[in-house]
Length: 254
Image (cartoon, rainbow, N blue to C red):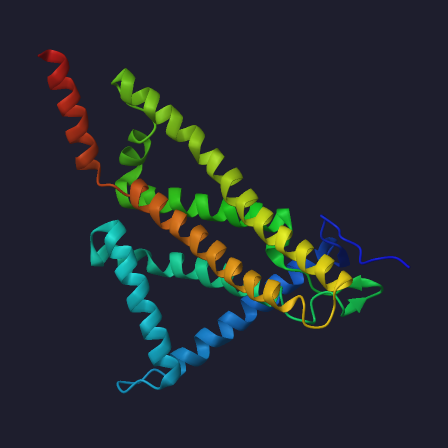
């Protein structure tokens, strides 16, 4: 008797225009489609007197904006960058939660599981990390201008130039940190549930399942929070950078 197979690599289901479609990509597309449908339905039902669905989402927005205010220090900036931070959070959250559904694993196509938790695929988390870091830098360039953006990494002052070089290297480190943190926690939880479920079925895995629901929320929250913090640091006004440079130059003259 063989136990359930644990694969660190997402299994390929079929090819679409010569592009391999894995079970993790398929579930990610399903989650994305459901979120798009939810957004369309919510937008069509917006009213001055909110219903239950709108009330819950407004509560989510107020809580999110309040948290972002404490980081950005400005409601204007919070509202400006809320869509990307909220999108990252909701996409990762529901990707993690959908990966815990009973259909993930047992339902198969040609003896290959049809669905797999997206974050349990390292390719998915790396792609998500690259998108997040690219978005931070792109929004930084829009906020500061090209000269202001370049000033983050290059400066006439040798000390600030060295700090800028370290910050440039850190952009690549962020991708590794983002991707492996999310992948490691979600994949470890998936393996735990498979092992516990195969050894002790029935109701024993339930506490571990609820734990993974919490872990899925925490990982989505951490990813979104880090994106928000990095975005806040990357969109600091250029005038503040100039003031720091001027202060250092004055100290050198003294």
